[in-house]
Image 1 (cartoon, rainbow, N blue to C red):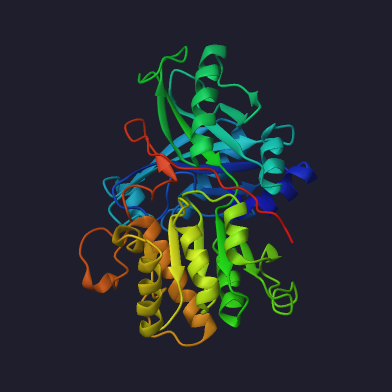
Image 2 (cartoon, rainbow, N blue to C red):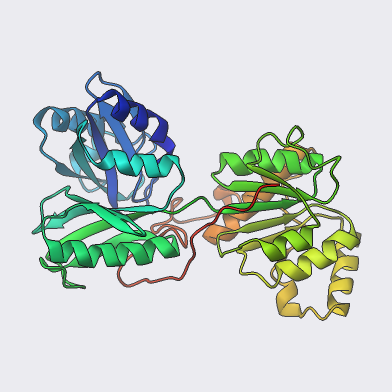
Length: 388
């Protein structure tokens, strides 16, 4: 929902009703994951996407009808459905899309405001079963709003949603009509909107400027840190959310890091690199990449071994940083690094799709973004770092 947030906020502030189509389930290969949305207002304007173009026309038509009738609908599009195939869902998967009307008085406005302020919030939506289709419960760490139609169901879902929000995961849950867990009477999709994951870039160089741009574009909260005041300036890094002037290892030791955090070390200097990497290896960061030549890499690893770092710990380092794309310029190098970060997060190979077989799109979302009742993976919610 974040990708269409500005338009939804505008429509809500203008008092404009709109239909919101949300992917609530995916089976097989599909271009978008649960939580992808498309919105359509009464003037026929549309924002967002539920299928990367495959079934947008059919969903648009359903949205205009729901906007007129006010009745929520659950639509299924898949290759086994002749009508869906005719509108282009040829990837072999099946999408379930819930379409519901959002009026000017909807309490979804409070959720949009939280998203705009990057406050953590979860949205639980009934997607099937005995509760009203499309009913929603909005859950914050300290409160909840709206209802799924039953107080006990609300309490059970709110409890699960807060746990999932803390972990930074979203997914399907199943309940009884009064909130009993692991039953099939009521199906609920819980979408967690945790604060953005962090990208910590150390070394205020031109490569860092390019990386901060692509990191922000990919949805990371980007911090650039360098001990040299002449280089660590807002003017040099306009796309970073924060520019911190501090010794890198001191800053890393003092800030919060979780499993979604990526650490990119671009300093090229042992007096910065070694203390920083020793601190980084003590964190749960999901990615630690280090820039340097092969010779620099070997020297760095020798110094780290002398400092007591084990081979298992060294294996956590992406060194030299990035994928082999033939990158030379700062922008090309930033793309190489971002590609490796994405591949690491999703468990993908990083190889050319033309050399692989099987589905192009994963049948399940990458950890730690989505889960189902049988797959409780640990994760963590992102935090905001201090500014300089």
